[in-house]
Image (cartoon, rainbow, N blue to C red):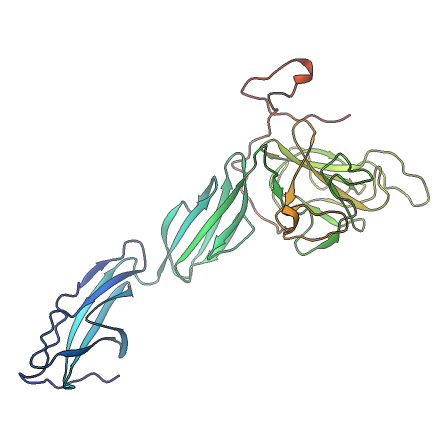
Length: 376
């Protein structure tokens, strides 16, 4: 657009943007709303019919008093007024938007549920092009679900490049006694398998909230969530197709996730457990190789969640969309369980419940000791 360069003498309108605020504080943001005010314009002998605001030869707004969003820095804006007779006049106003210097962006972090984040909640300015590591740590009794917003990730620790202002939310879900906890599938991300036996289904899960998932021997098995390894067995020899089932205990791994919950992975391969008791693991970390050990009828993984009293607990999977995350016999599941360097700073060992010794007529009082029961 070409701006008018000739005046209009005494008969034309007089453009006047003097009422426009020339300095606006954007705070920690990189832009701010600015009111462009041409109400001081003098219409002379014919009414003004158009008001146009131009920056860098482009119309950014039209109207006598308008609000526009301007980025931080200096803006030279030209007001063009045109009266009913077609006569024009111009006025120039410079608006300074004060905020983070150019080349920086704002990251705003929020939380849904109970947990801590790094960076802390609220808005923080970071250099443009820099990489910011986002870390979400659930409080006791909660579990991390995902990052949402401008950054979407199922990993509690992820990173983002600051190429614009961004808003992200760390979503945590409660793990309460009256709610079904959810974890991720015990398979590497992208792997698809069919469930051969679901929860409370025959022949061997009629009283257990467990799943059997057939797979070739040696398939990697991954942790469904961050936690501490509390039990390992890998000495049982594999079953042979030429001999009856040995009846030896199945090789297995058990991981305490805190909050009174642990996950169990059974029928693992002989010497197929790369983790040790006491070791901390993260979600998606390989904790065993599938096998055909113990009372199994072929290579498969048996998975379930237990409480501190060794009771089978209702649970589901974040990466199975149907039936509240609970697949059944014959369902095909596909894992989204990517390796996540989850923080274990907030991990607390599961503790016994107050009724752990109720069968002996004993009720525990706080603080409850950290412990797990095991079936012999």
